[in-house]
Length: 173
Ligand SMILES: [Zn+2]
Image 1: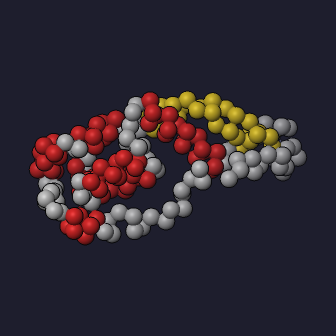
Image 2 (image 1 turned 135 degrees about the vertical axis):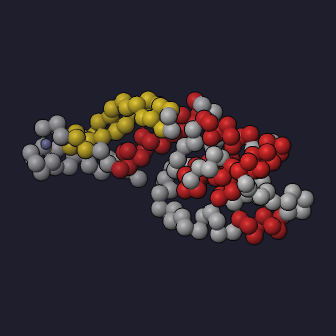
Image 3 (image 1 turned 45 degrees about the vertical axis):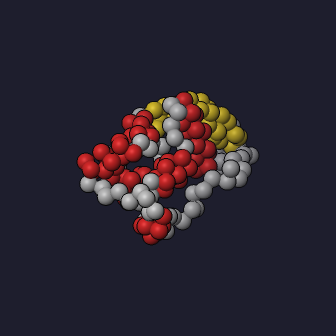
């Protein structure tokens, strides 16, 4: 997907033309920040500026990746794999992680949102069975039986997660 769709186009307000520019911006996500370069368009005649959704999304994605690397936060896939390895639904998982809204937890797994450091630490800690059991007891979550629980896992997980996702926001990269 091209980011230069407005490059050279006419600014009808003044008769000038838009040109692609770059700016350094500080983006804040989940209480953390990153310096990224964001593209935008500026009318060469009057200075009017336009920022497309693609440009905003690209900058946010770059910031997310930078923050994830800087703070060593779990990747979306890793979060999902840990949850699935424990046989937990998204709803149960969300309860264990401070009762975070289910939609947010789904967003973490899809890379739409970025978990903060506190949530990341909680997620990692749940890989430990004793911690998981203690947390589940506090949160009122019934854990699936560990031994030979494969069938129960499959049945429990169905329909809770991805059914509603349209996938329309999947980045082209
Ligand atoms: Zn203009």
